[in-house]
Length: 466
Image (cartoon, rainbow, N blue to C red; front, side):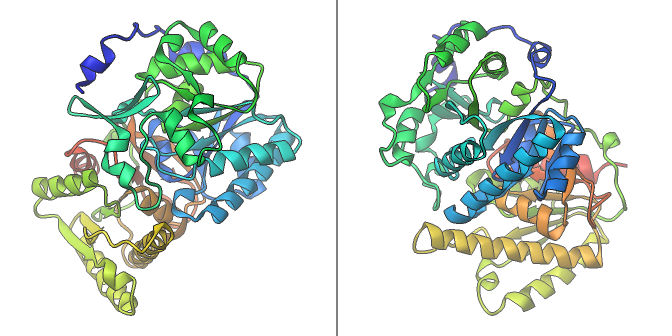
């Protein structure tokens, strides 16, 4: 369906500014965003992000008085048991730090805008841990996966992927075929029933429709107030103002909520403007070597973006990591040879490193996830070796698991500041505050966002900066 036909019957959006939402914020309130991969930061600016969650880390983040703090849990790359444990750890530490700082915490489970990830496991664990700690258990769980900047919208509870003007139900896209987190349903109410194996019936999922949202914050508040405790709410979103209306309603709602959201909702909730893309003049560089573009994602859009980057910059050196060698006895020798090849090429200019485009999967979801971890750890090891030999001018990491592991393991970033997006609403630039990557701009680029030329545009901004 063409997106214009989908949107034509809808009422007009509410005219609401970021400033109106910001004015309604609780000055002592803070969102603690458990980000299941680093790409959740791509829609915000000037906020702290942590890759560790000891109490001192949260203490420091709360001391900045930032309205939101990102904690990179990287759970999308983990099995369910480990993901659950990380969620428990963050809740315990965040609540203790918040009590000491006099802060009121709302927890946000940041998931994928194409519905991949540990749901309902993560929201179930968060709700249980919040209650066990003596805080108000969330009365409602709001499901807001929309990401309008990247073409993901929700209308009448159906989640769509919009590209080139065509709105495709997300269950009919390649994302729904994910080896670990695949699904069939595009309607969020049906999707909840599918993912909970019928524990929550589709009819029991409340639909916060665009008609209610575009009636204003009071109408949204009244709707949410009328729901029974424990209700999951599927939220329609077409554009930024829709999220701002929901945020304004939540700021005056006298019920505790838990949020499971895509990247941009945090921006709307804290009343941030849509940040202008960072320009080269605002980026601090530590050296004059070439930059490093590391591509781990295998989604079709990433493959197309990589091809376009090569077309536009045909002289850029390309080093390939062979996935099959990374998962057998040839691993160490292959990594050593490729690390030295990358270091040598960086002296002449920007280098592309990517895994083979062949997607190697296991016998089931867990086996596929283990292969993905081995490949990602190989990329991390390569990066660590390159960093020791020839630190690059900048690093772009393409793909969620890839960007998380490079940030926390290879570059050893414990704390960073999100400076802002590299493209409108997408692709996050981090300024590392700790570790050997201080002074090296780190760009987190999700596998499933942008257009065919987006990667080439980001590389041009960084590589051609004087």
